[in-house]
Image (cartoon, rainbow, N blue to C red; front, side):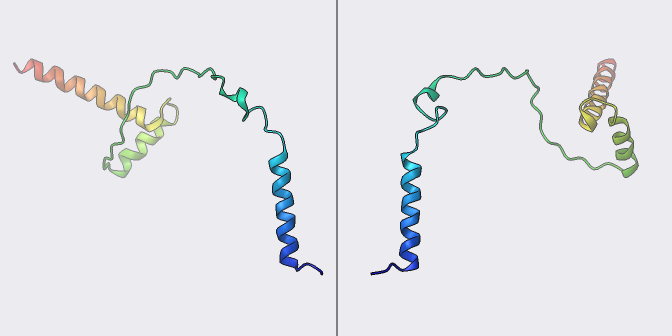
Length: 97
């Protein structure tokens, strides 16, 4: 009795599955893989948050132009400007007392 095409396909899939199960497990997944891996230490970073602000297009363009040569990009430029503004406003508030 001949086999139907679907039965032949099913048998071929079983053969393939059997071959895959019979293959040896690679060392990286075997019992030796539980060895601890030395982790690289990450440099200490400052926690940042996302803050959305609305700026005039001209001011945003000037920030982006300045940020091209800066490490950290536009975020670093704006952070530096805000830090300077906060320091100046704090010193002005101290003078008012």
